[in-house]
Image (cartoon, rainbow over all chains, first blue to last red):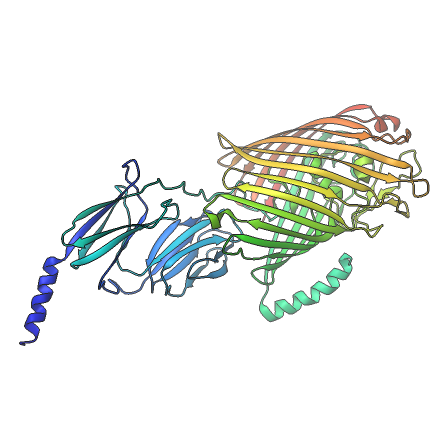
Amino acid sequence: MRLLAPILLSCLALSCLAGDVSIRVKGPTGDVVSGVVVYLHGDDLPERLAAPRAITIHQQGKRFAPYLSVTQSGDEVVFTNRDDITHHIYSVAGPKRFSFKLRAGEERKVRPLSQAGVIPMGCNIHDWMSGYLLVVDTPYFGFTDSDGRVEFNDLAAGQYRALVWHPQLQEASDLALDFRVPETAALELHLSRPLAQLPVQKSVNDFDFLEEY
Amino acid sequence: MNIRQAVVIILPWLFYLAAAHGVEHKLGGLLDLRFSVSDTLPSYLGGDYGKFQYADGATLAPAQAALSYRGELTDAVSVHLVGLGYFGGVRDGAGLSEAYLQYRGLPSAQGWRWQARAGLLYPQVSMVNIQTAWTSPYTLDFDTINSWIGEEVRHQGIDIALTRLGNAHNSGHDFSAGMAVYRDNDPVGAMLSWHGWVLSSRQSLRHETLPLPQLEPGFVPAASDPFLELDNRLGYHLRGQWHWHNHGKLLLGYYDNQADPKVVERGQWAWTTRFAHLGVHWQLPGNIDLVAQYLAGDTLMQSSRSGTDLVNNGYHSGFVMLSKKVARHRLSARLEEFAVVDRDSIAADNNNEYGKAATLNYSYRLNRHWFLHSEYSWMESRRPARAAAGHSLNLTEQQWQLGVRFLF
């Protein structure tokens, strides 16, 4: 009991110090940037906030949907073909390489993603299809909303680094900002250049019975 | 290696792979029921001067049936066989039109991808024959360029292409360069010289011989056998393509069969046939597709004894098509101009031709598989050889077609 009291006390103290942080991403002209990934690195982060899960990336309308996904290392990814044609999904760069054909309506699970990094994906039948999966090694990650904002709640006191990622980011170096909890409640990250144009995942020919002539 | 030898070699291997590794088989196809009303001469398909594939008057026929087989041996290697049948009333028949093995590798991390095909192939020239069994989703009849490709320009060979995919570089631009080396197409040029440009959806079958107009000079055979190897020389086709995702496609190429024009066997000549081609498909504002092709070249065959030019023709053809889809409706309009210029001094064999054509197609998609097409074609041409055979020097031909297509 004598031992437990200080532990409980320090836990209470820590949770008192824990804080919420709101991070906003803005472009070079001050306009908000939505749909980019913000994730946190820091000392002594919890390994996970929830049990490993599977995220789903659809192949729908001959597109990767969503175009950009983010997940934590240790999670799985499920590819679901909602089209009535076969896709040949591949990733030939980054930490997780795979290649498989996915018939109409089929789904396929890719084993836990052990390593953090960017997984660019394509379809070897439909060259215009393009998708990205960012695997992060932190439980704190999210997309900026329509207001350019992402919120992280109940962060333990300590030193953190916020990082921004998107395939169309045109920064010369990694975009990151250091901050401390509980001292910081809100911060802004500014892109020095606007995001490049998102690829339009669409072919010139839009017919159902195309062959590779 | 001819088709028969290839089949003998490939088929047992296929069955072995199918048994051992579970080859995935895919079958596609097309049924095309057509009602056509034509104002024309008897069809070129029967060796006459009509520039359409149907006879003068009304025709109701299951015009075309196609079966397209694809066996996926691995994720990268597949075998393709296309069989076609025509039952339009003139030169009916069924047989093989394409048979090839395809390799399509995965791209490298830098976005480079190799592809290869080997077998009985079309050269990549067409911007519109992109659908099952080399048919066009836009119109029932192909334009004059691709009617010619479908009739004569096919070969047995190996086609290798290298593509640089934009995706690996955060770019929407794909570039590819390809080269084909081939044989078994020495008589290419004979049909274009002796019956001229046509508007048709008839693809020649591998086994067919193609009847020719009966002309005065003794060197014109009764029929051309288009897929022969006569001189044991290889031909080549070079091409480059730029694809800007969601914007357009540009295709450039050069074809030379390198045939020895003096070689003749049983009335079948080797024709030195060369052409350059350009194709574009661009998406215009208002969701309008612009598709255009231009092809220009020459063809030569000579007396094996004296080396005199028996046929020396230049030729060119080009079309511009605009197509717009609104929900289930699609409207396509195509204008074209074509010519053959006879450069030899054999007056009795005048291959000169000049003409224009216009095609308007409306199609309605009933559901995923069924399509209705209504197509009107008009063609005006001047051809002295036709006059020598007792027809009009200047001729206007018209055709209206109603097509019901089932694709799967």
